[in-house]
Length: 345
Image (cartoon, rainbow, N blue to C red; front, side, top):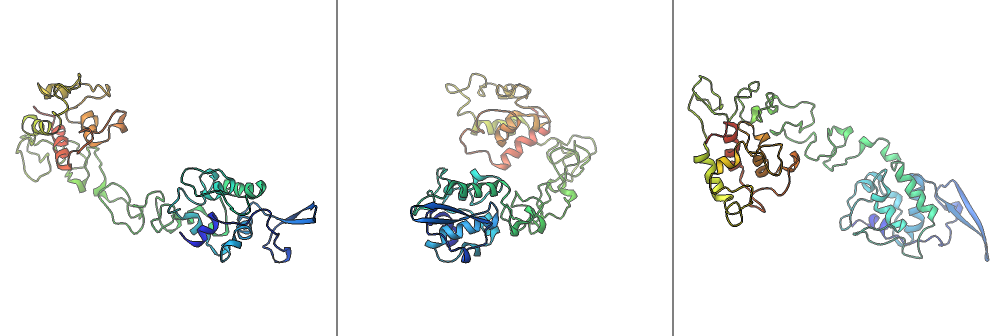
């Protein structure tokens, strides 16, 4: 862990330390003077802003650590991960999420190091409040005049440096375009072949040869109609998938172990007539959706269960096969293609 990080988290100066001489102290707005049995005592009063927080940390922590904390660039302090600790040092607008405030205020969470300063004890409450007020105000500083100057996702680019989504490190100006329908390289343009214009589930880069006709895509059937419906460059070669030839073997290899007596769920026995059990039959977990809806994978609950997207559509339980291993992408493509072609027997 960097020394300056330890300086923040393991500072030791306390509120009753000998006061820093006013003529050599960092700039502050005013001082507090109180009468003690040893005579007048003058304390620095720190401001609830960036400079005040730096002054506070410099005065109360630097006695145990070499070098002033004011040498630490604010963006580095702001963005730094805590390595062995949880959270971030400073989370603008969120004191509870800021480890700096939690350790100063003794509001520790699991994973936090310890309350600080250690010696001779905690800071006065009003000083801690200054840190809280500053963080609640967004932790403004000369280094962060604009939030868009920050690289929140750690991909090397801020919004002002061309990052189009600073919550997603995969999207930045240096990224290569992928077949994902996103502006991966942040140039303001999504390539036309990444778009699914007809909403059939396939874009040009995924093999759709007609992105205005939802009946034409790589897993469409290819009946005798003079059209290359399945986008393979051939005409009228017939349908590709059937339940008996392609889906039943998948069920036998991956599903029967649980969906057969004596373990079979009462509502889905796949050992007698699996086709009749799943095609056009409402799901017990999500009655508004059929287990298999011919020609529409997105409305087929079993397809969502094997894809692991069942919770996104309102379903329940675990992804199938339960506890894995999950079906490979080529096997899932066969199921998707079979449904697209109309889920033929």
